[in-house]
Image (cartoon, rainbow, N blue to C red; front, top):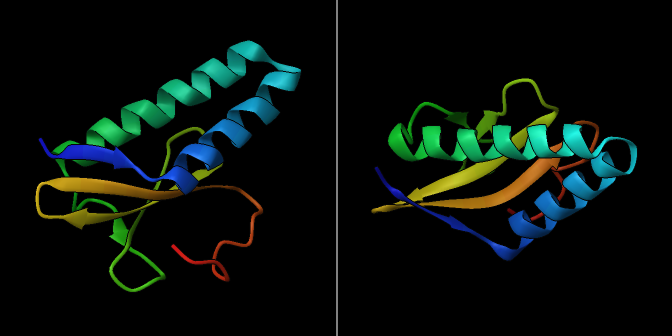
Amino acid sequence: MLKVRWTQPALLDLLEHITYIAKDSPQAARDVAQRIWDATQLIAENPWMGRTGTKKGTREWAVKDTRVLMVYRVREETIELLRLWAGGRDWQNTTA
């Protein structure tokens, strides 16, 4: 299993997304956070299972039962989580 390293933008995306959900349902926010955590572990075990990313050198994984797209790259023994994009956000015009 590879190590998982969260970049600051990915952590901020996670915090923003979970905070937004928690306004309406703290339990739903916990559920989504758990799904994201589970997805990071799955990718750490199988880093090439995500699709080729839109940005060069990246991969993407849609987190099951959420509107979250994880953008990451594989670096030797590490998965770098670059961004977590919630459905509807314009992620193609940003830096990864």
